[in-house]
Length: 420
Image 1 (tube, rainbow, N blue to C red):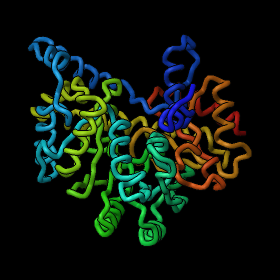
Image 2: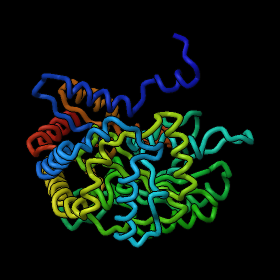
Image 3: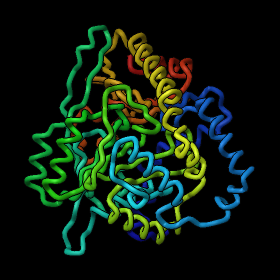
Image 4: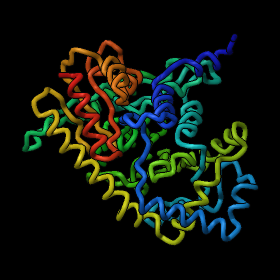
């Protein structure tokens, strides 16, 4: 089959399609022994699931579900939800925003495809612009979003070995601001900064000071700062350290309903200045006519009646914080006698393991684990824009600990056996 440049690029195997194919294979398999630790799927939190089922029943009872199924929304998404969310954010954080600062898309993946290609790639003047990731590793799904090649640049992190006051072997990635400032000063092709907070894959939460520093740099060079907040506040609120949510007219804040427990409804959210929101709406109109309205309709009443944020703070956050503590305890127990480091768990629901000076690569480990019906994500896929010769990028794996303790234990023990 002869494909266009677009078709050739987007039909190639890559990290994110590998991840989703693994998820699909595991979901459709009848194999009860599969240990799925690879995807970004949230856990099914019973109390939260009951709330969503109740809201769906209310939509059916009020006949609103017919409007949801039977009518298009505008290209920026469901107006009632956009107004409710803007009001909630204004009240919670004292931001001066309205519905005109909110756009929806069919999941964060679709929103980032639009944003990255709006700001980077081939420009009308013939130049080529790029997105800068100030901290690597970053979300694997960013890697192949560009319509043109060579759209992403990343900075190697500083690696700090932490003194935890116990036997726990932990480390943390820190932004190398000297390197960030150097590339911004010397490379005029950088058209936006992008960072996830909490960071997928490591669970890293960059500090408030780091966010302020990035924001100042973005304003200095007249480029936007894109913050991927899919796991952060106010929902689902999976942050286990002190961190404040920041927004201004130069920040593009991306949120999601997926990690609340609604990944199948594909509801991504962008909070930005009105010019960017209008642009997203025009792209949506061309690509999908209008975004999915089921997810937004399901949570609008919860937002308007101030029930969503308490649900996140009192149910979702404690649920995942407990999962994180179990994951750390299992790591300390199982890998106590091995030279393995765990990135400090500050948010989201991932363990990032670093097998320092490992004899095999993370890709080899991934393949060996699949033979044992254990699924993880090899780390090199997350180091977008980093030279492949850096050994560290081949020494790490990502594990999703949003599962039951027995499954996580089995997976970690299998990893230890193969790495011993």
